[in-house]
Length: 397
Image 1 (spheres, helix red, strand yellow):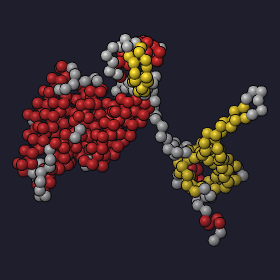
Image 2 (image 1 turned 90 degrees about the vertical axis):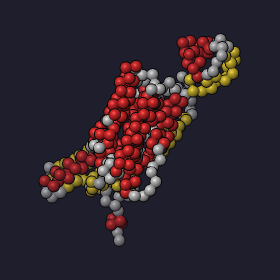
Image 3 (image 1 turned 180 degrees about the vertical axis):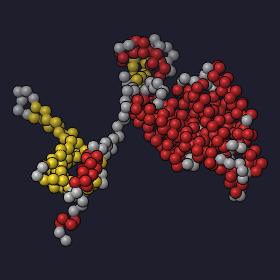
Image 4 (image 1 turned 45 degrees about the horizontal axis):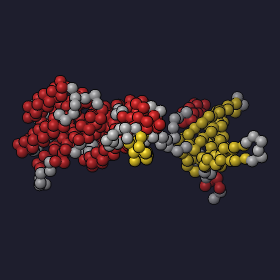
């Protein structure tokens, strides 16, 4: 068997081409430091240099029509954004990003295009991206989640096979759920009129439960309105975050019925569907609210992240629909990107040791601004601001 029969077919993102020649640039990334009036040189090693491939490729065909089609497909791949899979006959498969390409065609060699293309080995982007675009995407993902969750609920919730026991059980679940929502909402400092209107909406919902249960699409619509209206009560995103985090998992307060009959299974499934609807609605709003909080330091952001992760992990196994789960995973990923981008501009809380000094003087020494004394006071338990000493928590910038 000859060597050419053992070589892999060259391709870029699945599009084959005739491989003619390849140059590979590789080695180390360095910076050379040279100094005036000195014979010495310092070469700083910045790490490995991922390979760059310069490839001579050919696209051809005996049919002019097929040639143009092949050429269009190949050039579409070369213009494709992001990571591509390049299969090199000698090097194997590698993730790359296409750089500049040059095409050469000749009147004496019809239906043949020779390309010089540059491919740079690349890793997936793990760095934060601009938060503005992510927030727009986050809003779209939440809208998509709402649609998919309602569609699942309308198909999954049914009292047709549960009898009067199932009807009453679902009714009790909804009364307990909405009463808990009302209790949690009443703990925040929202507008008086807004809170009063929300409480009235809850009461109206509870008065209509018996009829709503019989039409799942109406029930899911009313539930969605309730969870959306929570966001209208307060313009404080920390309060909005706290409300929704506190509402996650309340379904665990009610154990499923024992038994294995189809009727019992249907009752328990309805109960799980109701509480899952609530959990998903609350955590998606919590994710969204977390990106709008005005963070003062990295410790505060880390605390929010931990609460989100704990809440997400607590409900993950209870999500019944794959589309809803996919949407929620996407929302979680976009939220993390936004928060990591926010982190870049936040100070850390650090501990310093000081002798007896007024807090205003310390604020001036640290930040050149005496008005930041309140910031220091908020991070520490200080009895007398005129004389602070010992270990003091302050912001790094």
